[in-house]
Amino acid sequence: MSFDIAPATLVGNVTKEPEIRYTPTGKIVVNFTVAVTRKKKDETGQWVDKGTLFESCTAWGLVAEAVANNVKKGDPVIVLGRYEDSSYEAEIKDSQGNPVIDLETRTPITRRVSARRVIVDNVGHDLRWGTARFERRSASQGYSGGAGAPAYQGQGYQGGSPAAGW
Image (tube, rainbow, N blue to C red):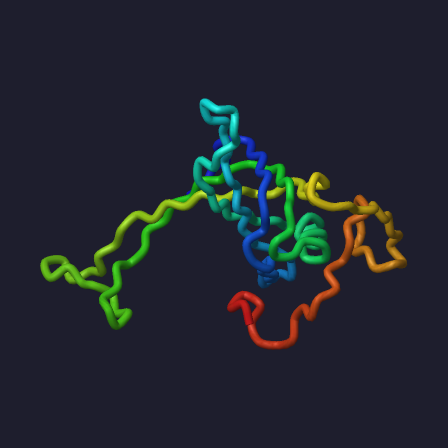
């Protein structure tokens, strides 16, 4: 079960290379994490860190293609999207990875797992920390279509199971 709970605006740095995957039907999905450091002025007027949040982000379709082509580890980014909460039942495993069994009911013991992530609607570089030049491309220059989003130019599918993440 999942549901959108609130709009999200993240300003921070990408913590690792975006992870590119494809669904079994061929849709691109990109997962990445943004580190957001909260700052506050102290009583002397100096900015001090108030902790860092690591926000999981998921982009689909054209936005995912843009992230795959343009966003790298360490990049300062601004992400607009919406928080999504999800929860599911997961089996508890022993130290060898086997399910723990309830001796009375002879069924696996489960626990509720909750997770939060940002479903990305828009992403761009934070130009306070660098420069950029927007370059619109046509469909003949490698766009997969729609609204000027670039087509992913990486390795893509090379056999195996896309669902398994090769």
